[in-house]
View 1 (cartoon, helix red, strand yellow):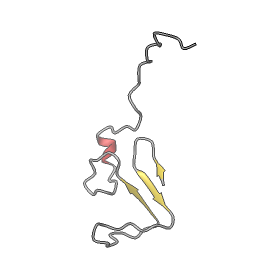
View 2 (cartoon, one colour):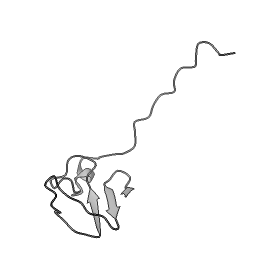
View 3 (cartoon, helix red, strand yellow):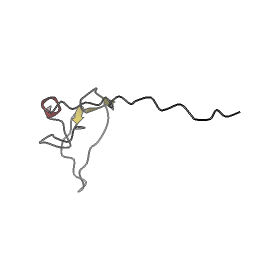
Length: 72
């Protein structure tokens, strides 16, 4: 499994994906799983992440304040 930057999870190789009823909805050598939550064909990716500017980069964090007391 590979997480694509700003995109889906790519699953390749020997795997089996089952739904809640134990059925296998698709059999392929590779699939792309949605991470943006907007795909119309969830759990599969339909490239909607590009339209909604989905990003996997976290927002920049400010530096934490220095400690008030230095341990000995």
